Image (cartoon, rainbow, N blue to C red):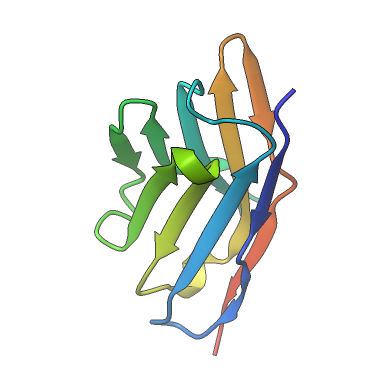
Length: 115
């Protein structure tokens, strides 16, 4: 079973940047998909950005051009670079990994965008 641990969240002012990391307990090379999801209070969890084993990426329309997802197989780590942050980006951010038929989730890291 793969364990995922997120870090890098915190409080940032609007327009600022953060980089989230998700470290896996074992090699991520075989994981077919890894992604970042977020859940704001009172809202459903939504996909923010994802990346396949082959390096194909996809983004929610609300973050295109501001967020970049990447994976470093050598470090067993998934990243999310978040720039030009807005108040509406405030949420708990979760890392998710897929190794069919198994799905793994991290515990989440809080991102708060506020002045």
